[in-house]
Length: 83
Image 1 (spheres, rainbow, N blue to C red):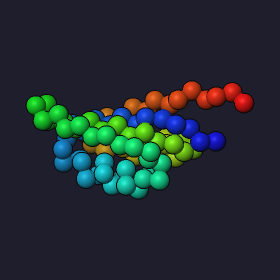
Image 2 (tube, rainbow, N blue to C red):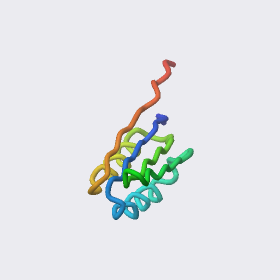
Image 3 (cartoon, rainbow, N blue to C red):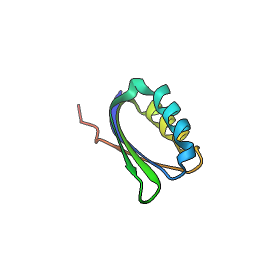
């Protein structure tokens, strides 16, 4: 069953940005939309990606992102609807 979630990524080490983009590109089939905000005054970037897909694939994406140095990730899932 597909889930809908928002994956929030905070990139604190800008050198890690290519690895983040590679992970997002590899899981692009999950993405519904993406918003990136550079916070230059703090030297970081915030990326929010709305995704839809199996929870295992969303977890795989967030796990891969979370293993990148200088990157923090959170995932918020929409509540499942009762059948």
